[in-house]
Image (cartoon, rainbow, N blue to C red; front, top):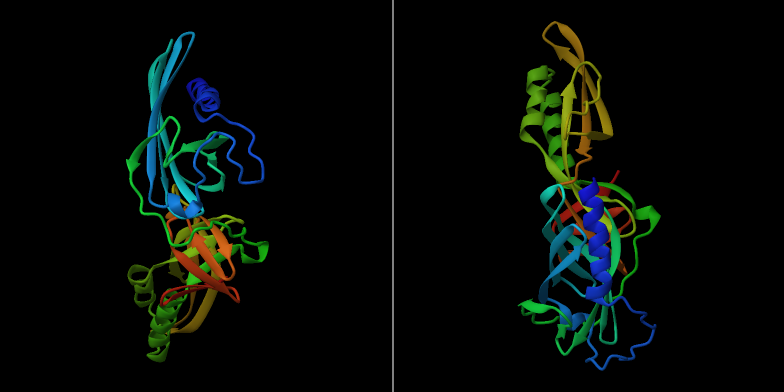
Length: 297
């Protein structure tokens, strides 16, 4: 824990020196003499830098890589190593999707990782921010502006795959039409059918979630295990005869709370623009992407 605190405190101090956290007004004035840029012109470009911070008994090296994915989102990756009186250590905060805004020749990035948050300010001179080098050249985008709004609370929640639920319904219909209430036959639904849904977590975060069904005759919801936390969103029951016995078979639809992937998003009209460039339409409690649709549960 001490190392983690030292790491983040040193990075914050380094951030002030490296990024030059200065006040940016609401206009597009160019106080530092750099070239005015647009969000669209940044798409595809990536920049990197390495910085070292030293204090009494502690030396750290931090590596930064940023890549502009869309006119609203930039990926930030920060990792590094250091040593102090306890020895050497390493850290890696992973790739984090962040929102950014442009003002004149400055780009403001809100960066938050697993232990802290800071504002990164890039000051551009031409096509390269001060103190950074080009890691990848971009081609820009036809859409010059950023923009977009946050999602609203009525959008928050889980959206199951319509193709998944339809497949389960068809499977169950086949079994019931044959009068097959053998538990083993029904358990094959668990083995053969699964899918992916989406969870709109808040106003700017959307997650991809793994979903399946649990089938049993004891009426018990699936239990959580390590790294496996089922969240039931729908329950059905079917009664019939299996041989000489009357049985009731319960079907629990659930998704796992541990998301598969996560992105930031903004809303433009009825369109959700994800930080990887994917676009989804939201309408009447449904998400649509190409031929795939997802219904809020």
